[in-house]
Image (cartoon, rainbow, N blue to C red; front, side, top):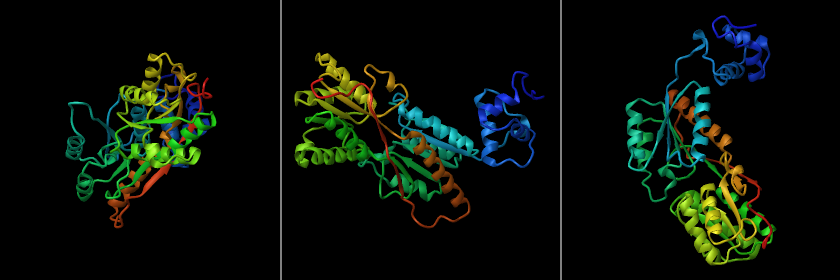
Length: 351
């Protein structure tokens, strides 16, 4: 059976298979009949989108509003991964996402927020923004809240900001990585991480110190000498690796996958094999990392769960403000546990 207002190649069976529902359910949704759960109806409509077919005119709904997504950049693959899931989730709730990317020489976060407010956005999602920088003034978010704009912040907690936060457990991520390397026999382990002023960097360094104390009895001062703060980039990882390799490290934990790739590059420039002479652990597990040479052992950031939770928290904020229910502060942080993914960049000490 085909649908009268769609191309003949589109069959009920195709939609039913994609949405994992019956053909009868698909028919009820496409004909606008009652008796279908909202979540099931959304699955059917999403299946149409995935299959590349426009929704029938009678099923197209007006947007519930614009929601801004402010992210640092698109060069780090973890940020597009977050953006895609956040945008899909927002669309599922009926909102139209507006992607705002900060680039060198481009608009600042404050300027992007001003432009979003001028367009009457219903809410804003901040990903790894100024809220993660301990030196940045949190007053910008206090002012935003006072103007009645709901927002949620991902990756970076500040107790002075009255909003929901969503974060990975950065401390646990560093502990997982250190324990993995220690089990492989590595004793001299270093940490390559971003600037110390960022909350995720500080939390990773704290987890790293705790793991070294637990595994090897090192004092805080001793562990701090094993930490190199640079940039969350390939170049930053390369620079950190130079110092850590000079210190005799046989295992390096990194604050991002890009940093880990920089560490691998630095090791190879010295003629060191990975994992033969040096084991490397990244953080994020963005989509292509499994295909690097060697495939990168990394700590997977729970992007799907975090992005979905962030959108859910924002929708709740939007609804509560619309109903005038929001009275108590909500600087709550939802922390998600990451997962160690072991691949080919780590091995026993000495190869």
